[in-house]
Image (cartoon, rainbow, N blue to C red; front, side, top):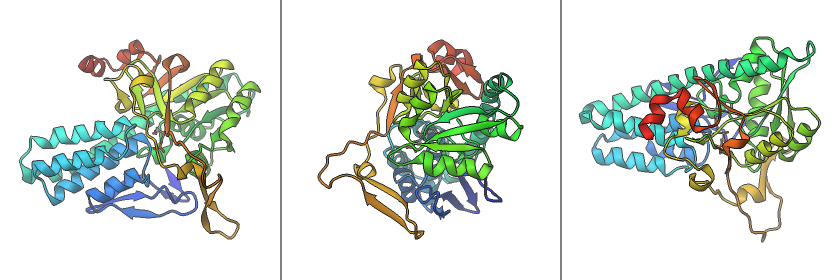
Length: 366
Ligand SMILES: CSC[C@@H](O)[C@@H](O)C(=O)COP(=O)(O)O
């Protein structure tokens, strides 16, 4: 998608170089960084220069290729897998991409491994773009249905949480793909963007994306969603997910569950948009089984922003001695999810719904 006049993907290659946007600097600065090796790829994921489940997977795939370029031995392959796998615990696309690369290259002679991993990483990126575009088409139908019941020019109001936009994927985003397509096809759409404390992916990334694409949007504090829904200001919620269980529970950025509760109480449809690579077919009960990342307390006790002199500053907002907990994700049980928007269509958030769309994947892991 566009930043200013220039088309971007969130990860790309130039010659032998892997490049990403350092998302910790957005929206205040656009900094592009190279990932020369495994350590930098792992650091980019752990320190959230790149983030969002599909982009974490794509970066990890390139991380494997970079490691194999330096050393294509079995030990290096195993070390790259473990190093990248340890970066972040919740998004299942990480394991999905690592498994895919290890499976594809592990059986090859050493001299063929780096090149094969590089090609596969590129394939994973291209597939992600096509998949998200298809998620967009499938989700667009939901927006169109709501738009038909509106007065001419009245927008469809969508609420989203965190950033499940193109910056969280390779392009298009998952939750944002239907929104971008609706906007591009002349359907009036307006997005309520949750700021998404503590790291403010909504304020810093989703608002940045939507603004660059010209999609009307309004930034709201995380706690505003319930109020907006009570007053009929939200037509539907669309969020992303880091891991969806085989039964349709959705694990996403902390606070998603509260939006789903408010949506259920107010009769607002609540959808999660995801590629099949975000389904963990081995997990049934999301609350009991999905590992929830806990991050450093300084993300909660401090905020980062640009002051009126154009300087980016980090300031403390709590007393120095206040204990802090920082749970990065929560689980929304399937019963609160109206449906799952996937590349193969929209289904119920249930084992039957998912198996109906992805019978071969559901069967393999049953
Ligand atoms: C299409 S991205 C889906 C999710 O990964 C997204 O909603 C999210 O929660 C991202 O969390 P983050 O901690 O920024 O990696």
